[in-house]
Length: 247
Image 1: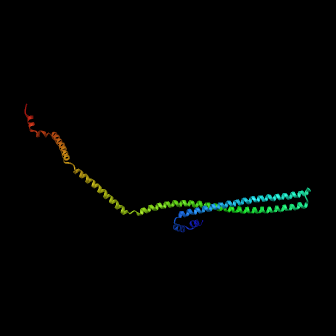
Image 2 (image 1 turned 30 degrees about the vertical axis):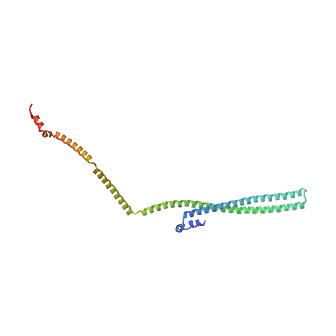
Image 3 (image 1 turned 180 degrees about the vertical axis):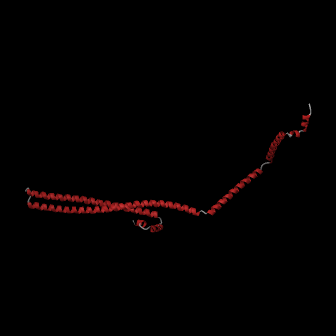
């Protein structure tokens, strides 16, 4: 109970200060709840014992009341024997008097048992009220503990993220990106260089064959163009003379 008086009864500023000094507020709170549950179990046990005493006092009261009534009936029966001539008056009076004394004793015990029962019932009402409040406190603290745990998780995650963000150096990040760009440009230039070397490493035969293929294609294209322009006649004078010789 003392832990929760310290944790939940002090002011807001003092509570924050006290929690900051605790090594683990959640564990301390959980231990406080466990202590309250132990107190609750003890209170329930005490309540059961007091109820048992109340039941016992009620039963004793009923028993003493029955005995008192029985002694009264016996005294009446003894006096009737005198009326019926079945017993000496003096003896009947003596025994009837003793029976009435027993009746008074049992009535006194009955009244004491009733008083005890009333006292026990008052204790039961008081104990039951305290148990209800204790249960409410435990339920309230358990709910607050759940909320506290959730808040701790959120605050811890937020703190870690903010810490990571705070540790990020923008200048070093930009420098890293620039180095990565330089590395990529270097790799691209190296790839292009290897491509040029590969082209230069072709064999002489491959160059000759390619030159012949290109020249052949060019000669054919040139002949076709000349034929289209009628330049073949100038290029062949003998053929032109034969064409002009009359038959």
